[in-house]
Image (cartoon, rainbow, N blue to C red; front, top):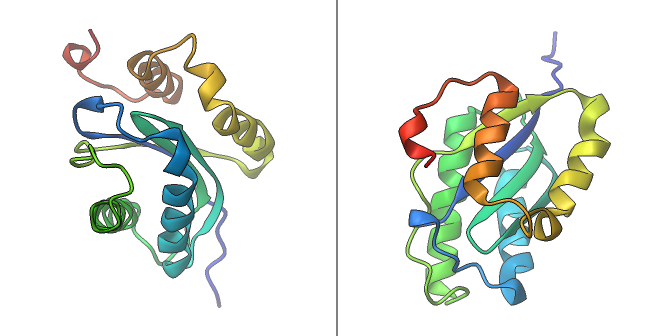
Length: 148
């Protein structure tokens, strides 16, 4: 018998020290490259977007892939690609860690709209405010010291 799953993830991670180095002009290239990394792991990228200091990735995780391994591969491969191709000249690294939140397939349209609207969303909300809310909404305990 085969394994049948529907695991929809909303992944969020930031640049090192949340430096605003992901310029608008080349961000789409980063998202295309990251989509390729996910496809190589048999995952289904749904929507990728972000702003200067962090990214959001909505995707379905293949049942043979460990989330931590996929995130590590996305970060390592994209870091190498960014540096080799000088995509973001001031990029140093990705911040350690990430947030990964699961949702049902029925929530996919809302999530796509949310990820698409990142530029607009961050005119009013900082990354830390957004991230804190995502953690609270998911019921994930975290250390308040990291959210001034």
